[in-house]
Image 1 (cartoon, rainbow, N blue to C red):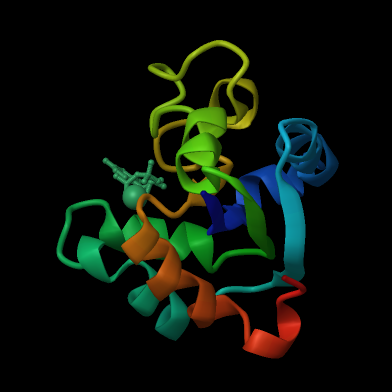
Image 2 (tube, rainbow, N blue to C red):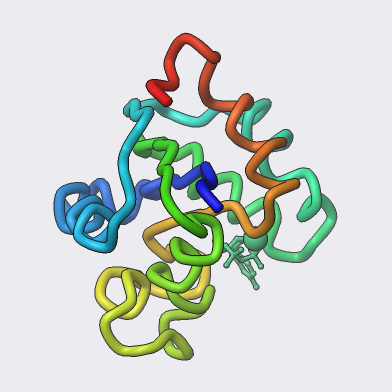
Length: 139
Ligand code: CDP
Ligand code: MG
């Protein structure tokens, strides 16, 4: 099934000049970029995007990191895109991520971990409109 998923290239990977390296991995695995923008996340957007993490011990540090510098938000489209992107990203903590995954290659640690991707169709449907209007998505 053709799916859409939200990807964020997080501030650590942007600062280290890995935007192109990361997009290359998605594109060479059959995914298409149908929306993209560089932006700095606000506290308000972080609270919406990470709503299920509010109250967790890492939440404040996560928001501080995500709002600290620009990120690149994208919508990727492709066959089974949601699971495929999660697999290409690798596990949350790069120490546990498989060889060749984006997090194994580029993440600093389990917080500054290079990329975000929606984890289910419900998450993708909730997250994409937080970052993009319908007119910004070239489906
Ligand atoms: O991003 P992913 O879905 O793989 O992981 P998550 O468990 O949904 O957590 C969301 C984000 O919170 C992670 O990607 C990390 O940036 C951060 N996090 C953290 O800083 N420390 C943790 N113990 C767990 C998550
Ligand atoms: Mg998650």
